[in-house]
Length: 141
Image (cartoon, rainbow, N blue to C red):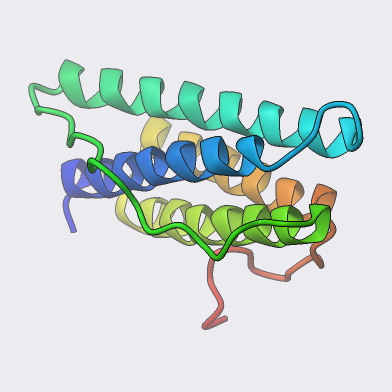
């Protein structure tokens, strides 16, 4: 996979994460679950920032950044705080897999960026109640 293709795949994953975190935020109450609401809001902003960085990286290289899909598959209704947490853990797991693939297909600053994003995704899963993994984003290891 080329560096551009890897960056495009990562951007596509960020588009999906933003959409899915928007849905998760809509199912989270700031008054009854302030900690969860703050975590979901923070992760939403982090993914938006990554999306913006990736779009700039691609544009600077003369590539047209992949657009977001019109919609994404949503999970069953998120009726509880636990369901929102599990949904957010799945988002971070999927992003970690994409970041790990980018680590494998890039070098230099692009790889450094992916390593940082991978670490942040792994940390987010733990904050959301997930378990630490030896090689986040690489279940085959």
